[in-house]
Image 1 (cartoon, one colour):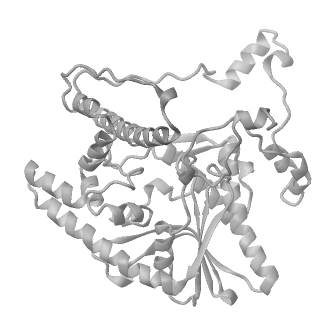
Image 2 (cartoon, one colour):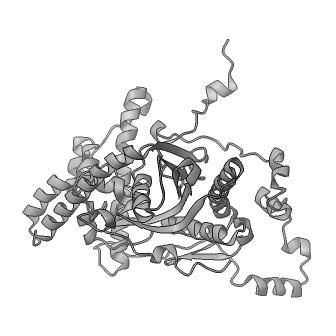
Length: 428
């Protein structure tokens, strides 16, 4: 159970990273524009890296994640006290990887080959840019001639679709090149994202011939990104030439995890286009008075509300990106007129829990006054029961619904929840 000697955040990244394939295919200039930005790890990304790290240790050490509750896991400048949510996220992935091996063994009597956190690359194809990544879990079923790419996603705010997933397909191509002794007819890509959608594994299977055709297009996209990068380096700081370059090479649509979206001209144009003309002028002319915009959502049709919500999403994402970039600039010492860094103050906490307990005992506090007793969680009871008996409590466990959120239908696999009028009133 020792800490990973090679934490995920310290692993090198290829110029064309498999995880950024979808973005780079859509936006050929993304790699170039990101050279202007500091590569920084967000807290959400660090949380995901921490979940990956404990998952890797569980698979290699053959133990369950719940045994790590309360320990500290570090990723970059962030550290987390491992809680049940992180353990449950890791365990869902670990269980899937183990179940796949067990199912194959039972059905064939054969043992599957697998690789954990395997370094993969496109080097054998001599791509225009260094291209590759690290596959979370790659498993090969010889008798089935099946290669499966299993990818853990720790995020809950951004739903990752498995259909046509370019990161998974990149890993599959790279695995076929890096592991040339395997004979494959079919490829399966599986996304494990316990904190988003219904939390269930999502898989797509396709013939290896489809993957080979896709690889041709991938190499073309890598060449386009190389051309955009070369042209960017030749701009020499000329703003007019940069604007022309941006119009030619920058495209929105896959901006979520791009470190340059806070300074991207295409992202800014998209956000301003979603605003009323007067609001757009207000943002472009900071000295102009704030527009008096009417707000009468009750008079809007459902179609108008849908259009507004789409526009708000574009605006909100852009604003978050700009704020994030400005904050990163301030943290590295850039002075932004009228703004300053301020400490974020958390809730009150004991400086030292052991010293606090001793002081309270000395002050004649009782055990009931110091400690709060409550029923152990399902994950804690499972730890006590052990892996072989944890199914015994399954009938006692539920995942309660706690209200509703309004989300895009394209970003969730969950069925639509009933409105209050449907839940509380019967049709007469």
